[in-house]
Amino acid sequence: MHNVTVAFAVLLVMLLSYFFGWFNGSFMVSHFIIRDDVRKHGSGNAGLTNFYRTYGAKYALLVIACDMGKTVAACLLGSFFFRCLGWDGTLGTLLAGLGCELGHIFPVFYGLRGGKGILSGGTVAIMIDWRVAVVVWGGFLLLTILTRYVSLGSLWSGASFPFITWYCYPNPVIVMLG
Image (cartoon, rainbow, N blue to C red; front, side):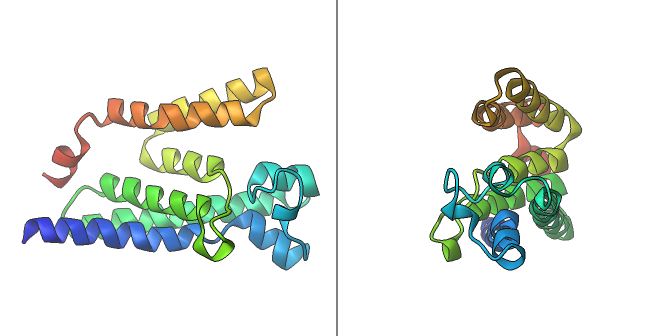
């Protein structure tokens, strides 16, 4: 029965968080406030970088607040749910962050055309552990500033996230589920 409970908890947290990920700040702000579709401009991506390059800084903070807010809400929900089951909330945070990230990148209602997940993934790093956030965000900022390529910084973030998380939590399932 315990394996069924774990599988159900994981599936429920990831599914609910996937729904949170659908609320793409770039798309929402461009569609409801600017009355345009950010995906019709620039790179065609519904992310913060394309939004900023297309519309400027005027509404960029609103996009940041939306994307970070939905990720924080999903991570808090996952952590709360896992703690209610008597488990460590960090695994719930990680699974919820992953679900939200997938919903952000591949939103069903937007034809699987979302953002690249840089901001939402970086928010998950903040929610997991400050050490993870320092490595992920520090590398992202350093590479982006030095090379002026946001994509290179995002590659670092995506590649370093699982390694630094594993370093901080070497055996997460055993430690967190007990």
